[in-house]
Image: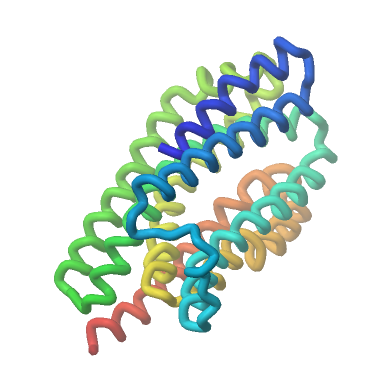
Length: 277
């Protein structure tokens, strides 16, 4: 509810401030901040009135090592992903600008459409983490296996279905953002790379979520860094030199495939240890 409230207010204020008040980027920034403020107020009010298990009193703040490390282990992978996504996106745009603003626009639009697929898949995998953590801690192996199997199938199937839908309606989706023949031509190629990535990203995200939910902070951070930086950046530059613009477009697909394979291997090794206990 807090997320929906903040996002909803942002969406309502965006056109009002950007177009209605002619504030441009400044209006978009203000709308985002106001949405976050209202969402935060909702969370604070909830914790003070209905969140009986939680306390906002400074007397209950703890810096015990075991608590702090657990919090960091859950938050650090997501922090790494967020930072590296910004850096990687900036590098990709800088390389793509050599092929003109039209190429950047096509890649950007396809990325926004592909983000719908990745966010839905991430929602499924991240939403499953508490169930994995609980059953892992309780050593309930049968239930843990059931959760992992069903969630993996759901994430991959959902990613595949959304990819097929985007493939079928690719022109309509692209034209909704930009009515330009050149952008449409480049956008089709960019969207194809994004669509193929959908089911593969589901496997990667599922494995990364498993590592994070079971407290394997080091492995989870490695998985995050692999996909958004350690593999992507060298692959991006290598393919941009060998395949020019198309190398930049398909760099993330290649990275996601390699990341999925490596993260699956990490998860498989760890899961065998869990079953052996």
